[in-house]
Image (tube, rainbow, N blue to C red; front, top):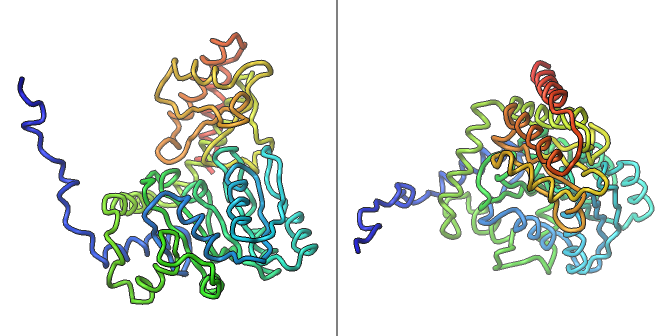
Length: 378
């Protein structure tokens, strides 16, 4: 039997010249411009949970007090990391149907003046909500605590003004609205954060989680010698994704995501059967829309039936305890598109019909298209 791989030619991606330190630094600078920061950025060689955990373990010391703002599952994860660092954790939990309240944050800081670290997720793709970071950042800055922001699901989908908002540690990934790779991620680190990290004897050193290693071996050396072999393909993919955003214009990319969210929410309301999980439009994340399944109908069955109608649409059921009641429409990146929004609502109509739910698909199609066009025209 002949070998089917005998005439296989390796893709050019496997034969690239090594990524130079200069090219790596230029990619960092492009990312810094995207997230509107003049602070140091560290591109870490893994998905975004790596720098998120690295930021917490680097900046939080035993015996300190941290404020953790929970509006979805990632906030819950941060609480566990904070406690494992030896911090006392003050928790604010907002309903997953809305957003965190800046006044509640201010009250917590006033009641606990010892708080020196605040963790917040900008947008929770898992629950479909987004938080008012500018307002929360203002009260945190006035208090004097460090602010860590998970902006993985917001970067590219909505404004992210890292320096202006007083964010000391900002973490992004490339796999959502940027439409890039999941294998590299970025943390921006303010001067205040570096000072705190340097003074923390428990901060990771000589570790994959170490921000200090990157600072001492890369940033402080003028970014001339890479500390280890970089994830070359992922770095080049990240650069291409950022360049593509620059070519389209960040404002246009953000507008597409706003239009996708508005169109999906309007279409679902006109469709019937489903309702937006996040109640207020202003609290809804532009990257993903979450929907509440009809009473007595399993969301997973609706998604399966919808994907049977159109397997290309970005639908999924929620995970964990929300799996039976929540549907997610992941309209981020290249899926922030008018045709994708129309197809998603149409597939949901078919999925609901298959589960015996009466819907108005024609009205939904009209509402979806009109909502998209209205946002784009603004």
